[in-house]
Every structure is written in structure tokens, then in C-alpha cells.
Length: 189
Length: 216
Image (cartoon, rainbow over all chains, first blue to last red; front, top):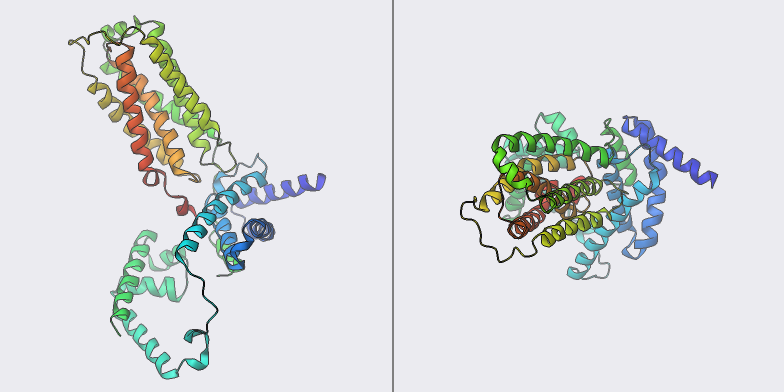
């Protein structure tokens, strides 16, 4: 019992430090929570497969990050976390049910992209060139959004800081760029 | 992206945040603002003759107003609590019970009034509808703005409670500003207005407080 209380207190302390902006405490908290979250999700959603469980773990961490201001430092930490986890599980279950209705499972098949030997160098090089040309043909704002978000894999916040644009403008530019690329590459063959 | 990479990225993006005050405190702030706002709007447009005409209704007038205020306060606490993970969700039952008691007080007060003719000298009840909607809109915007700093797990519930809180309080303001024929008329017109506003708000819940996916 004392151990439960001390764990609860420690997690609460780490969350308080997180709210104050302590990065080290935040990393410690998330690393400590991740196996617990994974265990709970795997217990309830193990049937959905390892990848789905890990997706849900990441969704819980993202939610925790987004709503960290809602934690009341004078209250226990675990009920707060479990409420977030419960809601994410419900969302995940709904999504899984929707996907399962629409998708048909196939046997594992070798696909071209997964088998290097089946990918001729010529074709791959052509594809890269075509994609590069399509990216270059984009308007400057859209090209910059693609380069920062998709090629450099920056977060929206980092990309906004790097480009001087707002997060909203980057989202719009990225969305338009992807639509333009789909259209350009789709018309190719 | 691996979970370890995600953790590193989240840590890089970490900024200090101010913990959200307790739902009761946030409710207090909103109610205080709403009371001042309603007083500023209602006092100049309420004549002493109208006020006297309303208050002659005695308990038939005051008990529904009191219950409307109680409904507004409980609904606001429940709305602010609904965006805090782990806060009891069942407070909506208390809000619904208070709303039912408020409706019942009007219905009981309306006994024997259903067949009374409407006094043509009194202002149309559309005035009440306009007042509730017009005065309530800024209050709804204010509570929606406050609720966005939370975790909108269940937008329809949060918005329904907010709309109930706003409509209950603005209903009190509207009732004081001009005389009504009787409780029966108030029950029908104000009740329908409340229902319509709650339903419309729920239909727009994701626009009002945001989608649950938005805080991922």
C-alpha cells in the first residue's frame, strides 16, 4: 500500500514538474508511464495486434501532452491518466470496428517495395526524379511545407518556427501540396 | 514513428503550462461575469412598473427563477468538469434533475392558467426568445472559450450542459425585463426556446469546443 502511495506521489511530482516545463522530469514520467499504458492497452486490446496497441500507446501520450494543463496537482495522478486512457481506448475501439468493417485481411504477400530485388534501379531512379520534379514544380510556399514537414520530418511547430509561417498556414500549404502531388503523379501513368 | 522518438519529440515541444483551476472555481468566474453582464443589460431595460408586475407573482414567479439559477450553476460546474479527465461525469444527472425541477415548478405554477386569454397589451413572447438568444450568445462564446482550455472528450455532453447553463441564466434575465402573461406561457415559450438552443448547440458541438481528435 505504501509503495502504491509513493509511486502515485512520485508520478504526481513528475507531472507537477512537467507542468512547470521541466523536460527531464517529463521524459522520466513518459518513460515510466509507457510500459504501464502499453500493459493496460495490450490487456484490453491485444487482439487488435501489436501495431495497433503501439498506436494507441502513442495516442495516449499525445493526449496526455495536449491536456497536461488539466491535471490538478493537488489530486492523485493515476485516476487522471486512466480517464485519458479510457477515452482513448473507446475511440480506438470505435475506429477499429469501423476499419474492420471496411477492410479484408489478406495473406502476407511480397510487394514490390518490400523486396529490393524486384525493384529495378532504373524504375526507382525514374520515380525519384519524377517525384523530385513534381515537388520542384510546386509553388514556393507549398514546396517549403513539403520539404519541412515530409522530407525533414519536422513537427508543425518546428516547421512553423523554421519557416516563419503560422501552424495553420503550414497545414493548409501541406494539404494543398499533397493534393497537387497526388494529381501530378497520378496523371503520370 | 517509434514511441521513444515520440517521447523525445514531445519533450522538445514541452512548454510550461498553468494548471487549470478547479471546475468550481472556473464556474464561479463565469457565473460572476455572467451576473455582471446580465445586470448591465437587464437593469436599464427593466422599468420599475415591469419589475413590480413581475414580483406580484410572488412564489409563482420567484421559485422558478431560483431553480433556473440553480440549474445554471450546476450545469456550468458539470460542463467545466466534463473537460477535466477523471472529474465525475455524472454531474449531468444533477443538472438534468435541477432542470426538471425548474420545469415542474413552472408547470405547477401554471395550474389553472392554461385557458387564460393572453393579454394583448403585453409584449410578444418572441421578445423573450430574442432576448434569450441575443443575450445568451456572448455568454455561450465566453463559456466555449473557457472550455476549449480543457480536454473535450465528449463535445455533445459538454456543449449541452453549457447551453443549459447559458439558457437558464439568460431566462432569468429575460423574465425580469418585462411582464409575462402567466407561468403557462413562460413554460411553453421558454421551455421550447431552451430545448431548441440545446439541440442546435449539440449539433454544432465540435465547432464550439473542438473535436476529441483535436487534442491528440
